[in-house]
Image (cartoon, rainbow, N blue to C red; front, side, top):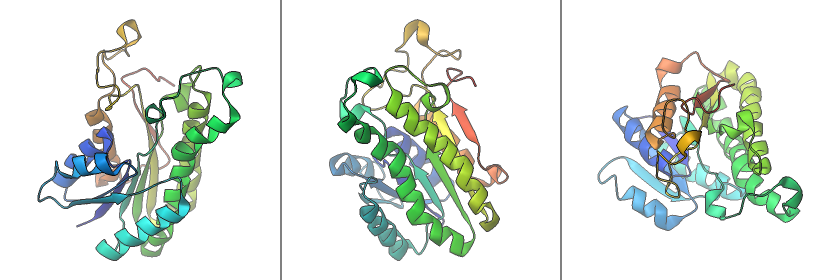
Length: 242
């Protein structure tokens, strides 16, 4: 069975993606910094080939340790889905950039940008060696259109999109595909209401669901997307038209 690593493993995106990937015959390994939330998700897959462990994506040493553990346990990593990130867990108020303390910049940039860099850096050598692999990086609609009072998050997600487009050119000759997904305002454990937003709802009438994002992940991992790389798939219901 092919092996997929999902960071941000306790997120609703990861949970829904795991359900779909299991149906497609994948073994799932979840990496998550919040061990309580990780246990909760793992308990939802009794008897299924779903395992997980603590992972701090901002710590390159911890990422390398995690990748070694997965490789020693399963023999390989066939797909990496970089989901870890976001800002809600930080409980930081939105504010104009000139009012944002510089010490807060890294609180956003490290998980949302450096987490992607760390995980790709650790996983790619193995994929290059076996000349096969898939990487999906979770960006954001804000990375496409920007957003007031979310400057550092927007910068991180825009960088993820650019990074994806760059490394796909480097690793394509090894049979590795790298794509990104830009969800719109999406449901999560912090904001579960899909109808919240009123007149600001996207043209399709509701916020992005976790299953919407999971469907995009499952598609990009699958052979149906075998000739797609460097793409940024907009999954926003039309709120991030670009």
